[in-house]
Image (cartoon, rainbow, N blue to C red; front, side, top):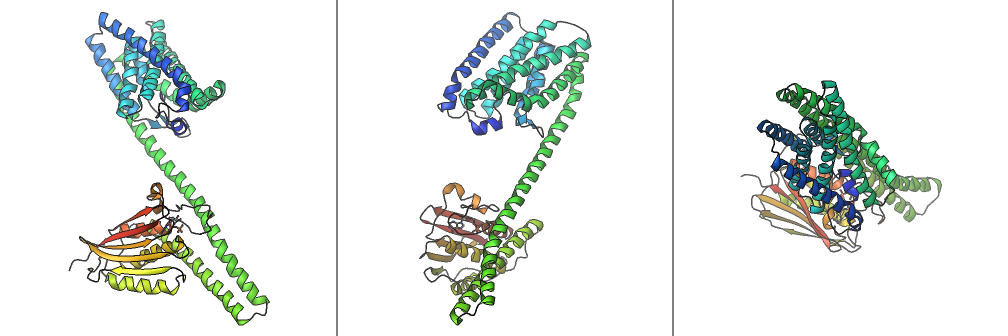
Length: 477
Ligand code: ADP
């Protein structure tokens, strides 16, 4: 069982800051659990000192402890179980309680959780609580096991089931209580939620514990036979879960794609439709006709760019091969791009160029580099103030040629600077600023630059502007 604060819970209530109000609310419970576990461990140490375990018991306990630590460190996701990943460590702690005694179970429980949590550099308060929970659950399991005494194999199996249940109840009960305190929710509601989400892992864990104990009863060496199937199942589950996560992400991207493209298609289509209707239905002066034709020209251009972006994004996804790499003169290329951009630049925006005329030829596909540069300049225009100043520069840097586009526009917050290269990622998804876009442009730029063995990045200060730059390898002469 996930004998610790799970990923899902951590998302809402990280036990990271020891002074958060949630932690303060849960502190009495955390102190109680830690103190209980500490007292129990002192009793264990005292008992081990007066009645030390035999060599074979120590060896067996170490094998169980090692397995428990590995299982705790690599939890297995179970599809449909919302409690996060399931650690199989419980199986080994319960086995320790049934095969040996409460002392061995307690030590395995404590050391397993403490080792893994310390290894993960968790906050001390979290280590204390999670290790405390495992220790107390193991103590309860050990006490239950000792009540059964010696018996037939069937009795041993029944005892293991009961001991697993006790471990589960204490473990989940304490975690449920913690969530109750953290979320300030009614106890019953939280406990019910925790129980529902952990029943399936419990059933799996209890049956595995029974199998392990039964095999161990015949010969401890026989239980090694369990390692193969357990590892195989864990790896398979992890892979399957990874695939399902990717499918869910793809599904989400598909929904986002439909929402964004339909929104982005609608606006220019409505303008084209409206302008065409007006042209058809009314007698207009020459000036008005030209203005409406201008709308149709601009908006259909926008539609074409949008469709191109979508086609490019899907093409980049379906073809993994690198594009054909030739070489081109970057000065000529930048000149061409600037000349074309000047043709449709808003009059209030200035576009200047700073070029190192001696820049070497670039080993890349010129058409694709043009596409990237045009995209960056279009963005600089789009996300600049009315009278923005944009500078395109070109220079040689070591074995590369660096293209950059600087604007003095909106800028991009630091936390967003990596994510804007992700598919569909927009800073302003609700388009509250009224600047449309699909969030595909920079994704396409990055894919193209990567394919040409280059590197693209942004340096930006919110409110002060951005510089997008990419390096491409210089051609060998
Ligand atoms: P789109 O412009 O179609 O939304 P992009 O992939 O080209 O998609 O850009 C992703 C996001 O990055 C944009 O929505 C915008 O928020 C931000 N962005 C891109 N370029 C700039 C820039 N020059 N200045 C400020 N923000 C930018």
